[in-house]
Length: 211
Image (tube, rainbow, N blue to C red):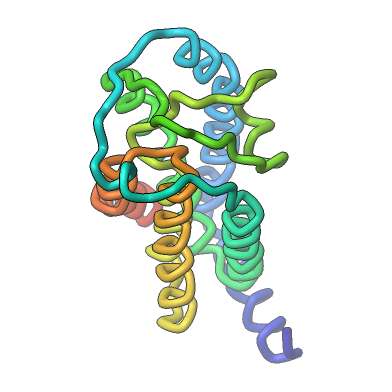
């Protein structure tokens, strides 16, 4: 980061932090997301023990299953690193992403709860030691509708402001959507629905963040 960019970022954060509304909303948001994430292991272990519907997905039937965990991992965490840099530079991006991500987590818990599905055939467990830590002691295969990996990176793209950033992360989310199908960890409907539901979640999160 250049000296000018650093000064601009510092000024933005000083102005944002001077606002009681921004401070309160950020603190409440951080407490809320911590509470939601603390519930994740319990929730996912519960849904992992229930029975669901096995979908006959003709798209997956045409894709041979391969372990592409490393590529999914690299795309997700490279996108996350870029987001962290933008958070430092612009507090509004952080606020919008925080409240949108809270909404995304809650909506996914609702949809997963409402639509119990059996894991796709030929599923290969996704090796992501960081993300998997939120699932509890056992690998989860029934967190299906809709794809959290695809949705989270798509949400990052929506929250970013620079067109070059948006284009890069939108492409990353597209790649992730394809790769989770290659690994058979999601049905095609999980991936197709993710951007549409995420767009609605972003609209809600942005409304809350910008009030």
